[in-house]
Length: 127
Image (cartoon, rainbow, N blue to C red; front, side, top):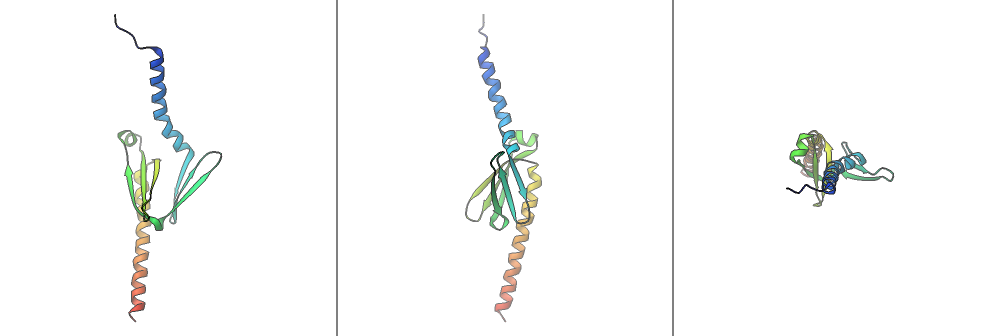
């Protein structure tokens, strides 16, 4: 005669599984990300809102992290690295592979503008 698994153990297992799947969904529901030429804006909260601005001038690199599960349902976590050695994690975004080229394009434009300013500055100082 084998012992059967108690019902409470099954219930706890199901609850833990549901929480593991649903918690990222709750975070995705309460957080929005906007990427524009000037900044990445992170807005969190339902009733009280918090906004965080990461200006494109401060961003040096973006990294994508995706688990196997995240790749299957096409979402992932971005890590935005800034000049002052901060790393801002942007978690659980839809279609993260689409966001990276947009951010890199804005960073590239910034770098091109800075190089242009340096060239103009050098041209003025050599006269």
